[in-house]
Image 1 (cartoon, rainbow, N blue to C red):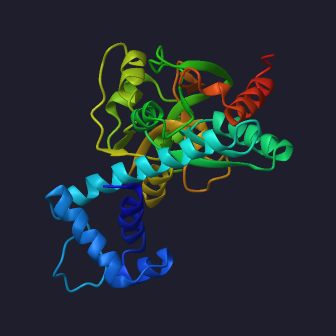
Image 2: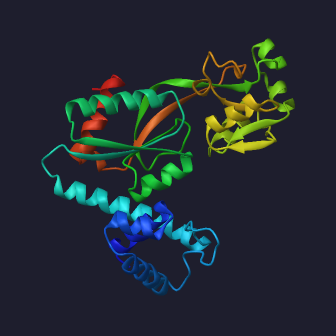
Length: 293
């Protein structure tokens, strides 16, 4: 199994069509089909669902696993070539993972300032759960990732980012909590139809605020955008942070927890990566915005 064949496989998955993938790869359709068949034979498993009435290419469970690993391997290979071939120059791509927080604005500002100074530096941003970003950071798929300050990051180098995010509940405008203007522990424990984030440390942070008690959410979400769509639809409430809810949103009101609960953010990276001139340029700009010299 080589990288060229993995690229063929991933392209077919993205295009969801053999013909379109062959055109994009500039190979013939029979050649592409043969390469995919040989890949399945090499791995000893079926990767694609065949015989479906739909012309759209779909993956088997084993195919979905290979897709995830293949995308990681191709990204890592691309980063490796970039780091080796661009020695002495400040050009390449920075792979940055961001969790939803107020720190996102600072990191994006740093990226814009780095691009202004070094126009040959590009950025690829990924959002997701803290645990997923940490796994990508470990594998070298990401160069940097932003995490809540409470996250265990002793194996990484880190820098604390200024500011923080207030925790609260997003509710429909007519909700009694919107009129009350605050959410105490008793309110939160009694709140029905509550949505809670899948973020790895959310349960721990909230349980600590509740004095050891645990919530029993009615549902979970991966992003605040999903949760707010539910709140706007009516009948749902979402535990989130103030950065997630616009102050002029007519269909969702942010009600802060009382006593106040605030979470900071940190930027983390694997030890030694900052020696790369591209990563060093970005990190230097982040530290400058944080007042670190």
